[in-house]
Length: 614
Image (cartoon, rainbow, N blue to C red):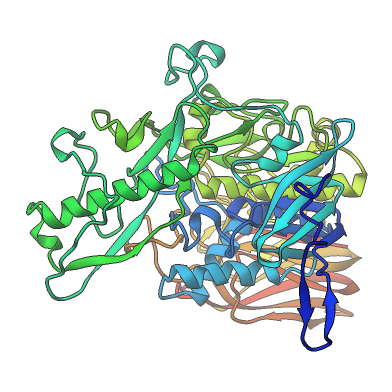
């Protein structure tokens, strides 16, 4: 490179250090080596990094903003939706890492603050010893050789530093996928023709339209009349000619439909679009405040206005399988299923707020149940060590209209993070993992409390299945033997749990011959039929709770049978997770007992699964 393009060349610096009197040249270049690099610190990227780290890989998580969370962060403030709008009206909530995050927020952010939420995410990531977190850092280029990424070249804004990271596996969870694009990974933008995949909601002819980005705002009641004067760049809202689905009330949370899409290069025009979005956002608020049609807004003033648009769609990278609308609607069963979704097919109109005649969103179809997402859609077709999670996976435009929500993206993130760690351990590619070790990946995900619909666990290392007797001190519902059936939630109307009749309660696993144990794990109840994500307008109803789930176990103990006596081997108080683990030195025993004393509110304890390992 010459000096104009080499960002590491600082020979022109004229820096006199007053402490030493020396003329110095700053060092603005680093080279790092790790097992796995995750690009993007949104919900998918966080789950990918944590799952890879917990499964033994050294991970560098690269985030281009000063906060984690992506579209969910305080900078954009989108709700972490997942499977929250099934036809039943109840969710089928995601578990695993994303649930751990949402539960942690319940414990440390009772006030529902978005800026505190940023730091809950920061806390969660930095707890992991195997993760190195790099903030304010963008991966700007991939260095490849023979269809394999060798390095990610990154620019850290805050330190003016070029950082080159070598790794075995790269995961692009950045949404736009700059690293993957510069690596030469195949990708698409725009809408497929309906004939290509048999999609009834796709246009007859392919085109370039991508769903747009949105700037959100919020307001609060100031207790007195508040005037509003629109800034000069405001774009007047044409209320007389807008579709009726563009609802103004409630106005407190802002307007998700203040959106601008693109028929071409939505990334290249991002700054132009951002300025237009600011104008449209203030135009709608000006209409609310000054049209005279909303007297209920007289005392309201803007409390927060976003400056960073939340993008819904750009590049979609092609894998060995392209997820499509018929797969989702037909609930296709995949041999390589690793994640799930169920948000409605929710395609926003071409043009967004600049196409006022159309509704802002076409709710094409709501799902009765959840659909599977295959691993073949989560890695690159032509770059051998590249994985994806989030809206940039291998899927059609119509399929993306459902799978793009962050709770669903998080399930993909946990899947690819776990896959990356397995690829490192086995020194294989993601494609080889899919072809030869997919059951290993699926069983590890299920052990780690991810959920794969219609896919019971079959972990041969789980010794709980070999117990000669499984006993409970009391049973109100279910059967204690269901704790080893491989399904960690009630599914499709069938019970897969044991529930006690009051507290305290005990579950005992016994063997006729001694065995050696070093771990006991269990999955308790958090009521996956209620949402626990943070809302802008908090509410407590059949589908949402704003509190710590009262079903969650709070206090319990583990005992092992040693020479005919129960010996205490673990205590958990103030539990914060659905997946509860007891780890201890390998011990010879003939039985273990789980003694449950408290929940966070309900009278009966409920377990869905118990496992143990040598």
